[in-house]
Amino acid sequence: MKKARLSVYLDQATMRSLADYAARRDQSLSLIAEAAIASFLSPDAAERQEAIVVKRLDQIDRRMSRLERDGGISVETLALFIRFWLTTTPALPEPAQAAARAKGAERYDAFVAALGRRLVRGPKLRQEIPEDVAGDVDTADKSGQ
Image (tube, rainbow, N blue to C red; front, side, top):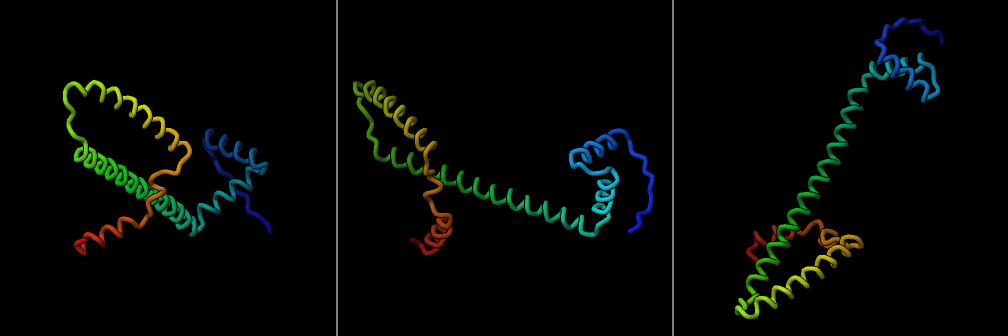
């Protein structure tokens, strides 16, 4: 197929970019320019770009949903623990408070060490909770249970 000749003037930065790209691909400047122009003029170009953007937005949406879910699990876990702790822990008399603080510090250190091990090895709490728990809870709330 016979090709038509075209002279194009490019600024220095664009020319350097074109030359670098052609060198990396081990192709001629003319071939790279022709492919770029064909892609630019293709009626599918906009649709392909839109599809790529939509795919990326879907991925971001899924990640945001997971973050939202994980944040909700964290808040509910903490709230449940605090409620349990407040309702089951009796107040200590003054003489026992110093010993309780020391024991609390020891237990906290053990807790932090256990948390570190679990975060490294897993499984994560969010992995133990099924994805559809929220749907089950909503159904139970509406039925009055």
